[in-house]
Amino acid sequence: MPVYDVLSYAPDAANSFSNHSIYLFARDARDRLTPNETQRTTLIVAACYIVAIAILWHIPYLTLILYPFKLLTVGFHEMSHALAGVLTCAHIHSIEIDPDEGGATHMSGGISWITLPAGYLGSSFIGAALIVCGFDTNASKVACLVLAGFFLFFLWWARREVLTWILIFLMAGLIVLFWFVAGGVALRYFILFIGVMSCMYVLWDVVDDTIARKVNGSDASSFAEICGCCPSQGLLSCSLRAVPYADFYNRLVWGVIWLLVAAGFFAAAIIIGIVAFKQSAAQQASDSQHFLPVPGSHSATLGLDWSPLLMVFSTVCTTLVMLNSL
Image 1: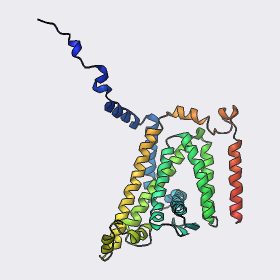
Image 2: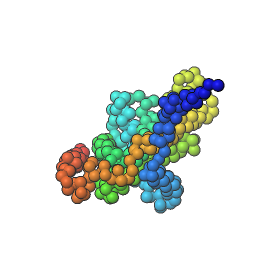
Image 3: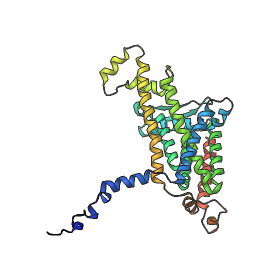
Image 4: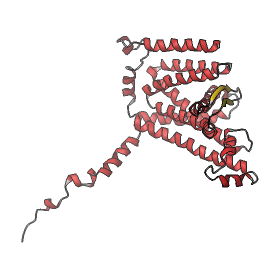
């Protein structure tokens, strides 16, 4: 009776399921989406921010802690309107921030169905980007430099608003302060807080303007008047306007859509932050010593020059003085 070598029938290792491309892709995706210890700490801090914001939002007097950050988010909202207006060839006259946490962007021209939703969606996108940067110290430093440019544009369009100047100087002071704490780690959590606050404010603002209230005057009501609830179905939009409460239902539909988009931005920010920044806290601390280190630190004494940043700071100060004189 012939004897067969059973080993010859064993599947080749290269063709086994454990080495299949689909399996390897799934395993790599699982590894990338699994947060490490540093990222778990970041997620816990973000969750604490959400709980703290939700609590402070509704407690009298304590809600004043969030007041400057609410105004900053209003600034993100109005700045998004203005940027969308610039991209659609509108002329931006001015931006206003109201002490009652409201705002207005005065412009002429542009494309309304782009500039109107840009406030909610733009500030939500900004918040999501800041959340992503909040996962890494160097990314947070880059976010601060981008925010500095944002502040300059914002001050140009709102240069006659005293409240805007106070808000910008307060935020700039906090950024500089946290930049010096714990080698930039505090700055990372501060940027994370601004991002979470922005996303939370957008979610609440969309619900308050479109779902909870039945009054006109919001971006959603203006957008509903232009597009209806089915902008691609002109006949349907016209017929809905003849129905009682049609404006409210149109506003409600767009509010739900914008709410889902804003929530999607928030979820995407968490996923991107986990996938993109896998460095441990020790690795981030080491990397941050070689990118705009804190003056007086070991890396700064090794010859890393802060003069370019000081030059930028002096330029910003000069620009602010010029804007204030206009």
